[in-house]
Length: 240
Figure 1 (cartoon, rainbow, N blue to C red):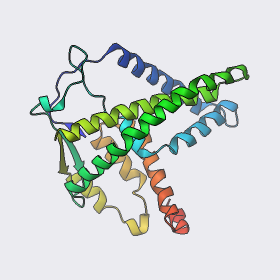
Figure 2 (cartoon, helix red, strand yellow):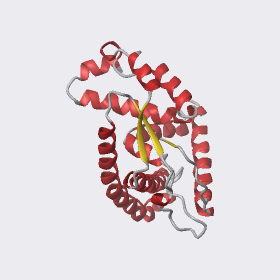
Figure 3 (cartoon, helix red, strand yellow):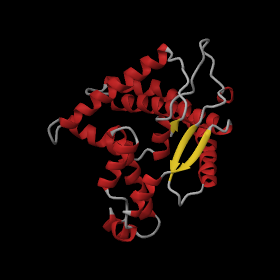
């Protein structure tokens, strides 16, 4: 999604602090990737990534949707006040804009109560996860619970933004010929999922850089698992 107009917004100190804290935590987590194979930290890193890969792709998407902007007084801005503000959603021509609007309505209607409930549950579990501090070694339950608190909160905020944009009519669906070209070069019968090289090139060219590669790869893995669950595991295994 890309806004056609970029209104000025405030960036509250708490939001900046949280964003910077998360960025630092992610940087420290990524350092575990270079730990020696077989070490405790390397096993923790692999296990953590496997868990994150199973978080629904919809949640990862909502987490990258910006929070609703606020005015100088700290109040959430109503998108209907921005008459010329639009968010463009690019899509292949095989999809109709009506399908996309229906999907967005379903996504927000499902995500808002889900992440609100899970956020509350994760916060309530925090005191219990701190009890693991008496166990020698890193407090993995606490780290995971803190991550889930942030993740559900961020997905909830993204769902609120998406709902506000959609209900105000600010979302415009536009066919993208670049996506069509990628799909034309893809033989589903022979290749199954879209090849890694095609996905990587599209992400870097159309989505502002390689920072979304990890999220896209998670979507691919989940799509592969769903294909296998649909009743053709052998075929899915050969296409992965």
